[in-house]
Length: 116
Length: 104
Image: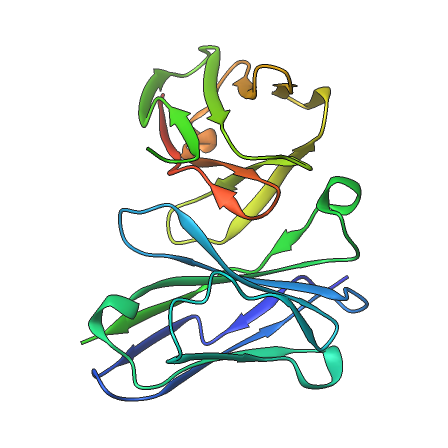
């Protein structure tokens, strides 16, 4: 079974530009999560999709971040315009169901975003 | 103060030593995960716990729901165990991680 795939693996962009990160969950996993780890800090939850619906987006930092999951398959996370503090590693994870207590989840390798 | 606290932050051990990493949390819990992140690599989920104890190879994870505490133990540690170990509560709140270095 293919794992959770994220791309690009690395992205370097200038402040003010737009970047779109993509996550392909494990096939059949309805639940998709986005997380971010800023240098030196703990991983922070961004949002949770159940199929194409946003179940919980309480962790989204501001309206420069837009996540979509059209069709309930892959998801994109767009940052527009990017700021220096957006630099970090963005992780995606997917799970077959909820609650996580019953299902657990699988992480992707992450996208390292550097805003210069 | 973080809602999920890990200790120690850094740990250096000699190959073969028994290692314990601790996680205390103050938030509500449905499940606690122990994750492993290698340098430059992705994150691997090691354990998911909602009660008791789990064992996988040389790794053992325990959780005490009443005390809001979990531990990850590594027996007979090996240099390939060197990584960051992260405690995550209910998929929402993460500890800062423990950097483990096992020297040969």
